[in-house]
Amino acid sequence: MTSLKSTALEPAPGSLAGLPLGRKIAGLLPVYGLVVLTVLLALLFSLILPDTFPTWLNVRSMLSDKAVVAMLSLAATVPMMTGKIDLTVGYGVVLWHILAISLQIAGVPWPIAVLMVLAMGLVFGLLNGLLVEVAQIDSFIATLGTGTVTYAVALWWTGGRQVIGHLPASFFALDIASIGGIPVPAFYVLGLATLLWVVSTYTPLGRYLYAIGANPRAAELNGIATRRMVMLAFMTSGLITAFAGVILAARLRVGQASVGLEFLLPALVGAFLGSTTINPGRVNIWGTVVGVVILAIGISGIEQLGGAFWVEPAFNGATLLIAIGLAGWTGRRRVMARARPSAMPPHPGTTGQ
Image (cartoon, rainbow, N blue to C red; front, side, top):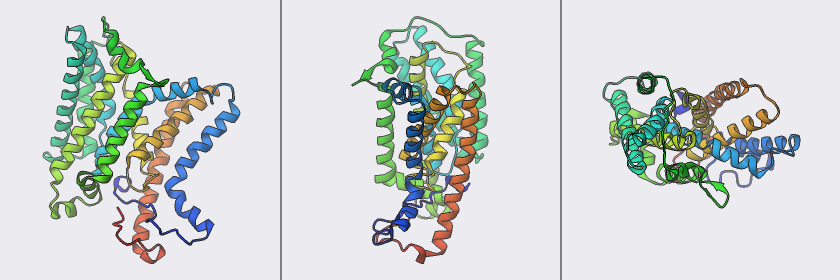
């Protein structure tokens, strides 16, 4: 899948120096075009809805409401670095939020319950990794299968009913607390994104993941433990998904199997959109964050304009198609750029990754 390959299109440092303004803009547009579009979209809705959209209340609402989606998008981004896809980010959050509540109802202290859910998410990610790397099942099929089974377990566990019980206020604080007026879930996303960005950009582990995504066989021939790295990517995704489930449980305060699957599509949209900006042609952390932000702005604005209940899924689906199309286009541009190296000579010392 071209959209998952590690083929970044960002200009090499210094490569735009001395070029006319128009050429500079053309060179930077693939990198920051989505960021500019995000700003323009926010300005547009602010002009149309001056009394409701550009308000701190609306900003707080978007930061809080989209935090779970952002975490799931980041979870999906990690396997995508290796050229794999993890659909269980949508299915897993259903079961994890139910278990986070059920364990507390059974008498488990909430910190222990949270640790147990995180551990189960890690093991579940390991299972996905084993199916993909050891059993050699396509990641889409493997995670669709395990995700569907996970959803069935959630339905069996709840019997199709809500899981309700007395929960401590300190557990709710995981979601409702704020720092400086900013909802604490936004800081979870910021901290998680920063950590993943540092690892993926500045450590050998990150370079290994991208190398596997670009060419698994070449990565293996260069001594990279591809099987271990892919399994680690799925385990990371499972851990982040479990944490998102805990935050969702603290927000909903009840467990129900009918909640959670609606996060799958926007999570994938955010991850795919992330491959079209910042480092276009390559899935990347800050690109994913920008993708979630543009979803939050677009959906919030449309809803305030009186959009019907079906507008959000339609917006998510259309955006996913556009994101995959753009990702494929940027990947093809990268291939063409490599075939014509004279078009933009690489800066000394760069690798093109």
